[in-house]
Image (cartoon, rainbow, N blue to C red; front, side, top):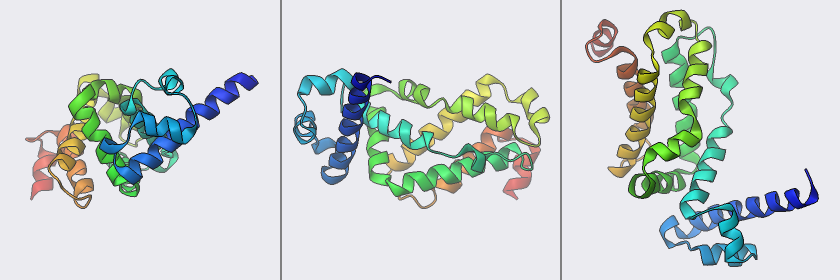
Length: 200
């Protein structure tokens, strides 16, 4: 990497880190691009060279946050797909809990401004789910029944479940169980025998 590229990466990182600090201190709605650029010490045009809006900064933060998930903690060939997905959810909820307010801002921004499809594409959770499927002990059984459509339904259901959870003003408590219930319904369906056994 050239010196110029290193400098650009450093400026981009400074904008991201400073923005996140200001979002936490003042709240996302109250933070401005002017304040971010003044704190970093760059021109407003420099900000827009890297990010088109505050929402893009928030997206970059969320992508970075979830990219830090250690997939080796999630996947085990000794576990079923459901067990591995539940491990992923547990790790995600733990990550959310560490910066709940900032994550809530992110979900609100996605919901009211950009539409969630554009954002969820950045995370490639369907790709993560396929990776988990391939590394679960029941992979041969579930690969036949878990089509791309079902994986997308699972992805959208979990994402919208988180949005609705926080939009309703709920605390973090109970979110993990709610998302695990969503996984079970997406994997087995409401009328599946496994689902009926679980509900007893």
